[in-house]
Length: 322
Image (cartoon, rainbow, N blue to C red; front, side, top):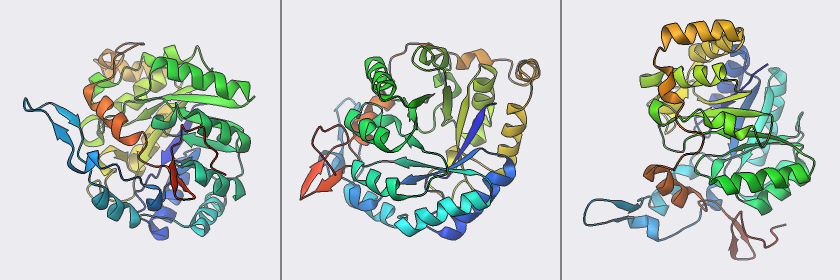
């Protein structure tokens, strides 16, 4: 059976009340996992070149503009505490849904290791697919790594698979497009088949615009055999959070779950009737990253790091963190 991951991301706005509603709605909708992000604003790195960005005289963007202070102020309103994460795990279990976490800085692995997870499973964001020291440290704690591979080069994906398998851990690769939101033409869902050479568990982390594209990409990925679908989720209006435009609601979650439980023949019939141009989402197994993805990789890879004894240590740095 396909597994559905509901990604709360930071749609909880740093409030337990909203996160509680997300957990309850995810469970009621039939999702398998409810996921949140272990992000701490103090782990945000200040890289001055992003304060102003850089645009060439011909209008071509070379460095995106994301001022540190504004981003720090935004994130600081969304921080959860260690007690919040303990509470989140307990709440999910009470609602009979499995809690899941994504970790963004290596120094936080020690915190995650202290928590009482019912399943030793962790999510790795695509920008850390090639952070091999981090992957190795996660393998010390968790039995199953779900790794997104957007904005990651093919050789990096191959090396990540070799590392996780060498540690005897279960591996799931999620194809995604790290452009928010991405269009249906950018999905390149043929990539799912390419990823199966590395692991028999592959899926799609969907960042298409909900208002424009609905569930078309996720349904097509299911038709193509995705083992896992990850989708951002909100209980608020889509304009109330940063990730709202790529987040589905309770009704859409139930629709997605219902579709996932159909037979392949039933899924194919619905796809052909309701999404006759679904093949535009296939794209290429091997593809060049778009300029937007390259720019996002440049910013997000290294966005968070670990401050240890006054020194910043990146997730891919061989230096010890703990």
